[in-house]
Length: 332
Image 1: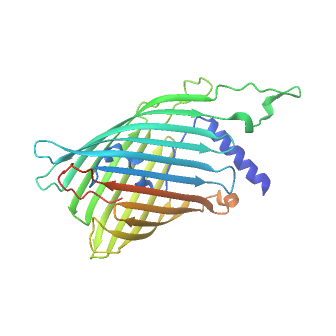
Image 2: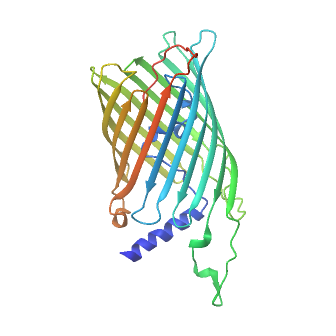
């Protein structure tokens, strides 16, 4: 079994050295909105939103893959009738992976406008773009290959272990706000529009694949106490694709939908990979979610089905003195 585990460890290292072909991902994708679609920027009920997620994966196989993301957004009303919403913000994530401690830090600056497309402010069409800067580095000290030994002498000549690039992404999203407890959202985004170069050995053909993301979800009120949250996300990046589909059920601990307390239980499935079990808690304007991946792919032989835990937090509130028109945006 140890030889199998070592083989997977080496495989992970090889994949990382191939220019990081696949972006980071979160099981609670809805809790990292700017990572899903820049058009979501600022489309919130309050004036600002703070969000963060932390993921620890594959500790049962090798040195864990650790990913953390944080974002901050501001929301403003715009237009002659103050119906449209402009959002701006900042997103930062860091990912460290495997024995090489392959590290990626990304800084994104999104901006979006959501236009009211009916007189009742119940339908919005959003457009967003995000400029970004990414820097990656790799530590070769813990990696060994046969080619490093020449005539019995250890050769420590390595390519440069740092790479950076600038990036641009864009998205569009539609929101249907029926009432305080019922709404629908769907959107499409494309990340890495210009396929920036990411290489540690000056290879001009080593490009970051464009990433296409489609996501949809709904809030469906079920009386005073219960709300259903079906969700789906499809992602394709080069030869890789991912489908996550699931459902959360919320039980309200009081009767006020917007200024309230509630608890969620739910599950999702990442197609051909893992079951995701989720619990979440709303404490007034603060939300916290915890999930765990149970792996059922071929990797389960060495992972013992242990994918990894993930924690998310989100806080939305108003800024004193900013009195924008109340809009019941989708709850994440």
